[in-house]
Image (cartoon, rainbow, N blue to C red):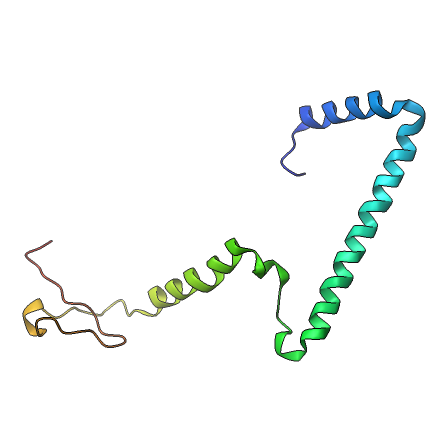
Length: 118
């Protein structure tokens, strides 16, 4: 839970007992639970409203995709994985001498292989 181990949880309980006291601790815990439920409900409603407002074109939209880390992983590395997985395993590279000097490779072409350089 949030990367907390048992020692940290025990320390938080002891601090809560000192701050709220044994009489008010159950009330504080109940209030924290209600607040957490309300926040979760508000977040779910906001996500549902966003999906409804965007329309059927964005039915598979996930708000976590807006996180830059997830965005990069989804859009950049997924393309690399697709390219890697789509390259045939039996492809053989042509010798470097068969390519014109300074020529550019077309889509799907394998770069020249220089057996002397490896």
